[in-house]
Image 1 (cartoon, rainbow, N blue to C red):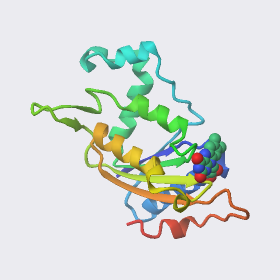
Image 2 (image 1 turned 90 degrees about the vertical axis):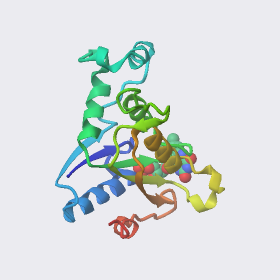
Image 3 (image 1 turned 90 degrees about the horizontal axis):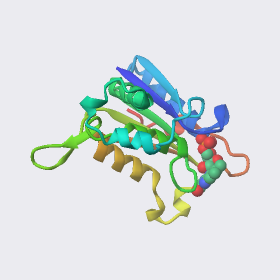
Length: 195
Ligand SMILES: Cc1cc2nc3c(=O)[nH]c(=O)nc-3n(C[C@H](O)[C@H](O)[C@H](O)COP(=O)(O)O)c2cc1C
C-alpha cells in the first residue's frame, strides 16, 4: 500500500496542517497500513495555474494528447494519485477555504476523460475509486464559532473528490484555534480515532 502526502501550507515546518498530516502518515506507517509514502510539497514545487493553452488541451480527447509537454505537470500528478492507495492532504484554512496551492493542484488533477467520464446511462463516473483520503485542516479559529453553513473545506474536498475522482472514503481531522495565545498542538489526541 502506498500513500501520497500532499503538503499545501506556505508555513514550512511550523505549519499545523503539515504537522497533523505528517502525524497521520506516521500512524499509517506504524500500523503497516501503508509501506511507502510519496510526498508532494505544493509550496516547494509550485503548481502551474491554468491558462488559455492548458485549458484548450484539457478539452481535447485524451488519446490525442499523449506525451504533450503542456500536460506534463497534470500527467505527473495524475500518475501519483493513481498509484496511491491512500491520500493524506494537509491544508490550512485560508479565508474559509482550502489553500490556493491545493486548489491549483485540484484544478490540474481533475480532467474529463482522465479522472472522470460519463457512462452510457449519462451518469458521471470518477475513475479513481477505492482510494482512501485523510484530510488534515488547520484553522486559526474554531468551527464551533462559525455558523455550520460556513464549512467550505471538507465539504468542498468531499464534493470534488466524489464527483470528479470517484473517491468517497474521506476522513477529516481538524486542528483548530491555532491563533489562540499559547496554542499547543496535540496531534496524537486529534488522530486517536484513526483506524
Ligand atoms: C491568508 C490567511 C487567511 C486565513 N484565514 C483564516 C480563516 O478564514 N479562518 C480561520 O480560522 N483562520 C484563518 N487563518 C489562520 C490559519 O488558518 C491558521 O494560521 C492555520 O494554522 C494555518 O495552517 P498552517 O499552520 O498549516 O499554515 C488564515 C491565515 C492566513 C495566513
